[in-house]
Image (cartoon, rainbow, N blue to C red; front, side, top):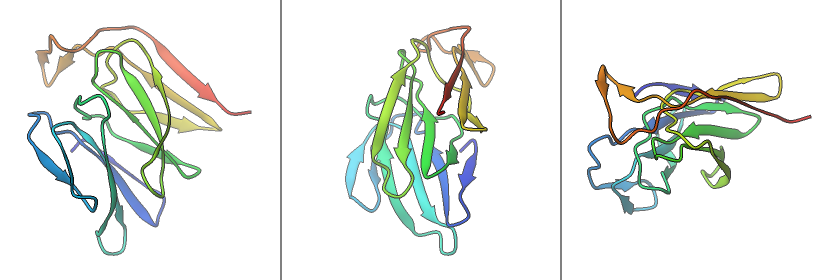
Amino acid sequence: MWGAATDERRVYTNIANSQHKNFTLKPSQNTTIAGGWVAMEASSGNILWSTANPNDATSPAPVSVANGVLFAGSTYREGPIYAMNAKNGKILWSYDTGTTVYGGISVSNGCVYLGNGYKVTLGFVNRNYTAGTSLYAFCIS
């Protein structure tokens, strides 16, 4: 909905599901009311995997991919970010930022950067979101 990333073989994007509608994750046939993330084959558009947001929150933020890892955020009040295996969608690790992660995640020179704490979405205050003022950097040396 809000952005996509590619590693030239696959296209990755978020599944916002802002209305929490029941839908089926392809190709697994699992159902969820959460947002999530999906990988598609770039040459055909075939869905390779999809992963539900494990805390049943929405996932409107754009994703980023680097070195075989997909990075994404969650609007859950604790604001986790997730690192997923780009080949299969398995969550490798997560980190609770303490506030909503609504914006995208940037990757540069071995570091992942994100800000968090948006309380306004599309011009409206969202009372379910937790505000914050932090900038995070996770680096691999």
